[in-house]
Amino acid sequence: MSIKNDRIDSIMQKEISYIVANEVKNPNIKFVTITNVDVTNDLSYAKVYFTTLDDKVETLKGLKSAKGFIRKSLADTLELRHIPELEFIYDESIEYGKRIEDKIKEIHDNQ
Image (cartoon, rainbow, N blue to C red; front, side, top):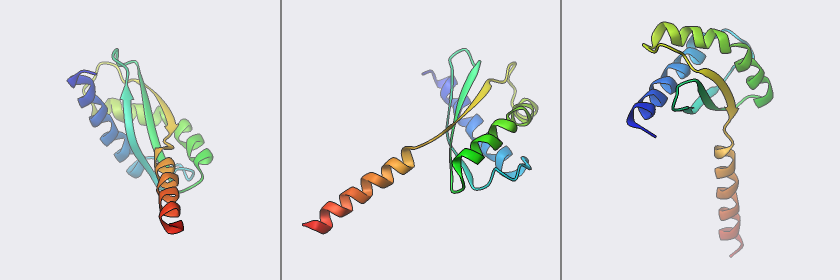
């Protein structure tokens, strides 16, 4: 990854987080955290990883339906010639970490 891509990833994560939290009016999108954004080298696609405290299937449907609005808002905010196509992916790393933490706690409690 180049420094440019890392910077674009970071800026897009911040902007998408703001847009989802403050501008999207979809009732299915509640308690969403954008955990990471990975933009391809040619800036044509971006994988947007998210977590939620609500139903992840309904949240994913809501994010997919709001994708056009989010891209339009990004185009208004960011100074890029082309706004990447967004793909929303549920980030399971937090759940995985929680399961590992629970297993470690269980092992310590059984000793």
